[in-house]
Image (cartoon, rainbow, N blue to C red; front, side, top):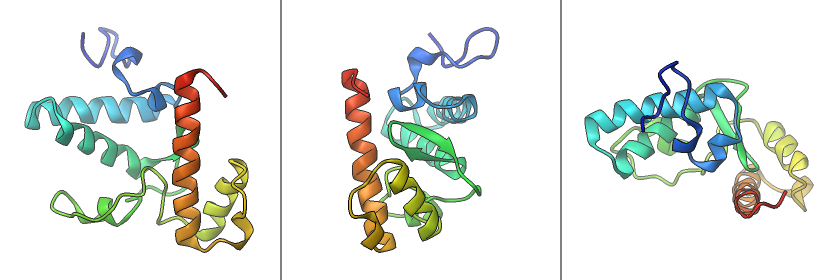
Length: 142
């Protein structure tokens, strides 16, 4: 079964769970990029990393799903550096966003101690909160 139906809609069963809970643009961006990357690289990790990199230009991970970013662009130094870069990724958190934006997301996700965190600490705390929410969602929790 392909990434898209005959009507051009994304086949939900072919997507990671975080994308199944995301908006249509996020699903289509990931699916279309993955399909193209698989043609070029084959069905493997590189194709999936490419699809996530494309997704991270327009969306950021918030809890157990992806939401549109305020501004398009790379989400972290890894995404900005391209394929030959070996920097750490921020796991879907838009590390290039303002500290205020990161604080507002931390508030939305009820991250404890957020008011005294530096920008890098907020990014790290958001990654952990997102991972926790994703694990809960996969288990069927809220």
